[in-house]
Length: 87
Image (cartoon, rainbow, N blue to C red; front, side, top):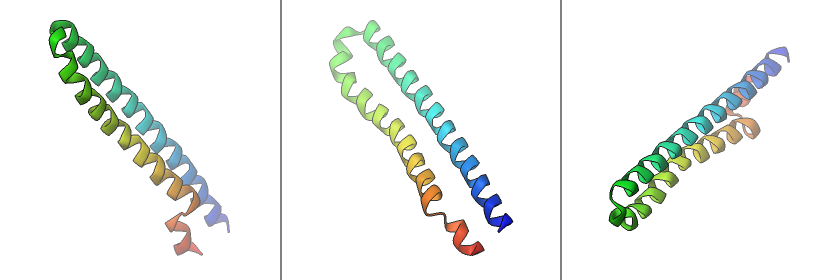
């Protein structure tokens, strides 16, 4: 029983680290994409309408990585495949 509790506690720590690092990475990615968009719009204002849809697509793809990480973290939190092997 002690080993089961240890696996659960390590899983919770791993989920926290996984979601935290994904959130930091997504925030940095969206910030870089946004800053490059503003930089290019300041250089060539006539290209802003062509670049804006691309900005939203790339920002959505960057955020998708975070959402997938949250889904995997929730899977490990509520349906941990490691616990089936132990029991």
